[in-house]
Length: 84
Image (cartoon, rainbow, N blue to C red):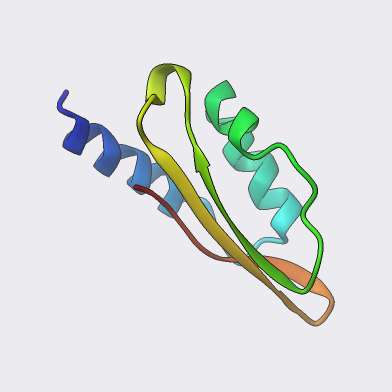
């Protein structure tokens, strides 16, 4: 599988996880996909909005996880998520 195909597959998997879920549920679901995602998502997510740009390691070396969230009615939700 080429890197472009691998990136497309990872983005498809991320898009299948509902971004309408609360932020912590989304993080938990993505973390279960692979330990490399779990490591990239470690941290404290606070504030009304924010974003991350974290390098993946291991099986996904050289890819980056980009994700942003915002708070609606006191519940943080994922606004965007993709692999770059």
